[in-house]
Image 1 (spheres, rainbow, N blue to C red):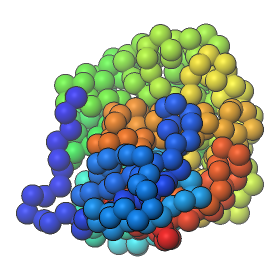
Image 2: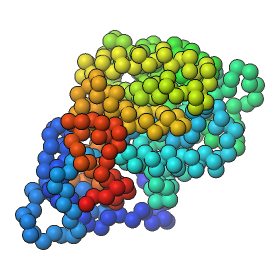
Image 3: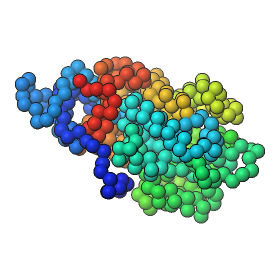
Length: 424
């Protein structure tokens, strides 16, 4: 599958590190699950060579930084974020000036980079402008893979109107995480429109959700014909569809229509796990958001009707993770946090490590996530040809996952440039 370069050819790219060697770096071969020590040469934002450590006194072919005693991981990938979710009450976005939201989003994305997330997949809200600003160096942020606005039926998970609101949901002045489309022709047009804006994937709501005010968690949303229409449009554009879904019934309907990734899946059962495997589909889980919503949601403005739904999916998420792991499926790393709760993004590592081997948790945020993004060999691994996205640590995360969960990072490298901390 080919992916067009969406950046403007008339704008110079972000400056790259010319030539640097990370000497005697102990790096994680994520695929093999072992630590290796080598010299890693970075040029033009890429990893160009991995060799045996040079002997003392050897003349380097450029700048050399000794990383003896450090631990190096690939840049982390969060497969489910909402960079525009600057408030826990998503209905407030409809009445919040775009300029304000963008300043808040810029801070949220900068904080993500400081936690070692050099790439994120936005699952509703981010657009071509944010993607382009990051690529051109105007925005300090992870690389952004975006869905544009998610597609929702009237009264579905993407409809932020309360039951007493009668105005049209389509505000023209302010940001929105979703758009309403009903009927096959309407969802087909909406899908084409999001693809027109350069979306890397499409997001569709096929079950009820926590943050929506008028639906039930156990509801199914969109007809099979509507879901198929979105999948057809995505496949025609060499893109894929991700579906918000909690229950077995909702997940099974999505899989039958060709949806590639299931977002959440907290209430999945054994039969549906087998279907995910049969369809070569992926699940992205985000357990940390439910912990945060239960602990802080009400105090940060989450409406009462949404707070009441949290319990239904909080415990189910742990059971779902265990079922998927037992079946040999490793859900991609996701956080899905809202507003001020986004500071807990790295906390997903600690929650998952209670139920999975630590290596699998790290793979969820590296190799598994890269596969979801269709960027195998480019992201999520330290191999020649991959992007020079790295996280440098003073402690071994395989021995103590809190190094990642608490973001105790020495340095973050994105496209060969140190963007947080220091290497030496």
